[in-house]
Length: 347
Image (cartoon, rainbow, N blue to C red):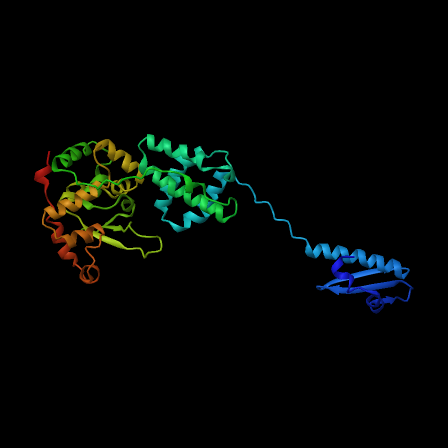
C-alpha cells in the first residue's frame, strides 16, 4: 500500500468500509478524487488484498504524467506550400501572391527539395543567399529572406521546430536606387523601338498614363479618361479608382486601336512586362516610365497637385490636399491637353 494511505486505511477504516453481499462475498470500496476503488473476495483477507491492488493501480494512474506526443515531422516544401495557401494567400492581393509564388518556385522550392523542416539549420540556408549575392540579386535575396522568415515562424507556431534558423542567416542589404525619368533623347529612342514591338500600346499606356504595372490589367477607357484601380493599397483597404486624362501624347497611340487590341495590351503579366522593357531600354527599369510621366506633366505646366491625383499620390500632408481638393472633370481634361511634347521626341 502507498505510504501516504497507510495511516488512513487502518483496521477501523476497513471495518467501516466493508460489507458482505447476500452471496457471502466480502466487498471493500471507497472513492478517491472521484475515482471508485473496489476490492472483493470470499474472505476478508482476499478482499483487502484485492482492494490494495486496485488502490495502487489507481494511485499510479493519477500520478503518472501523460506522455507528450512527438511532433509530426514535415518536409519543408510540403509545409511551405500549405502555409502559403492557408496563411499568405488570403492576406495579400492576387498579383502580390503570384509574385511570391514565382520567387518560391524559382529559388526556395528547388533548394529545400526533400529536406525536413526540423533538420534545416542556418548554415544550410546561408549558401542560398551567398549565391544570390554572387549573382548580384540583392533585391531578390531580400524578398526570399522575408518569405523564408515568415515560413519558419509559421513552423515555430505549429511546434514543428522550436526556433527560427533564419535568425542567424546573414543577407546583404539591398540598396534601392532612386528612379529617374528618361531623358528626351532616351524617350525618343525608346519610342522608335516601340514601333516594331508587340508591346507598343502597352508601354504607351504606362509612359503617357503613369500607371503602375500592376494597375494596367484594370484599365478601362471612359469619356476621355483612362480609369484604373489603385494598385498601391492593402487588401483590407477600400478599392478606389482614379481617372487619368487621355493626353495628346497617348491619343496618338490610342486612336484607331480596337477594343481587342486594348484588351491584349493590358493582359501581359507584370514579370513579362519588366523583362521585355529591359530589352528595349536596358539602362532603366519599368517603373521609371511612371517617373517620366510625372516629370513630363510638370514640365508641361500641370500643377503638382493635379499630377499627384493622376499618379495616385497624396499631394502633401495638408488637410487641403488630402481632403478638400476635388478637381472637376472638365478641368482635368484641360490640364491633360497641356501634356503635348511630341515635337521634342518625334522621329
